[in-house]
Length: 406
Image (tube, rainbow, N blue to C red; front, side, top):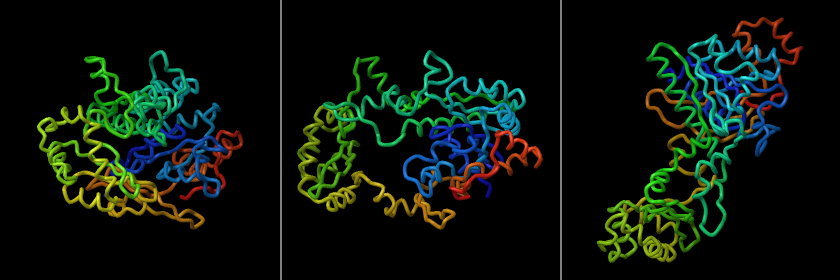
């Protein structure tokens, strides 16, 4: 069956994480994604983290299902190539600093004049408007300004970061949501496109629960509390006798009573002061202490078995090794295997979300730089002679050393 986005053409002008993450998701569900990269080095992500034969393992995942077209966006000739491709595109995704595309003659006004149905998804640090619009902003800055960093870590230490680019990925998810809503609007209301403006800091801020209303009404500033969840008790990390970190989330009233029965503390479970979360929140240290003492007397395997039998949500904190070997991940096809051009095996994350009738798929891995330049530009109407002329001018690259699977 056709994937849900079959027939949608996406032109990706961004680099690194946020914009390409969004385009990747659209490609996994059937969109044709044409990634524009600078000739020569390509997207900087190609050289990030662990490499295989000179190409990042991250690249193979981030650029899967995409076609690489090597075009110099800084040259007038290259800009004209992109304008031509944009005439047939449904969505353009970019994550340059605001004003960059306009400087190149590739802003929304210019592109939509020739393609009124065009949707442009613009991901930036601080959005397309406001006093900070012109400042560079990476995911780390968005996580800080959005409030996430302030509440992450222990109260007696400086804030810490999650050891991944969560701000960029969250912005990419918001970009996908915005693109799909804009597609729906275009379909339902006469074919008009629009700009989807996604700011990294706002995407992070959108996750911050009741932080603002609590501050605005009561002056409460949520602070760092370590491994627990502020005001939700019990929901914390506990250490087993054999040194395994286990998450126990028993903040539901009935679940809490079942947990207290498991740890032989019915006195706490039946105490009317702790019958609901507001009462438990006021006694978080006492309740966590009782759970922690019980966990310290039992090995992880026994803890998990007892809690599972009692219907208490729990789990070990997984490393990459745990994830790859886990039967739940395997049962849901969340660890996919593929073969690179040199025969090396690669494992990568599966597709999320899972659609019952029109599921997503991985058809290709991240390609070599410019692997599809000739194919895509010929489909756009360029002749062989025109391609040779563009290449001679340095505006495009028709071929590149093979570093990625296709």
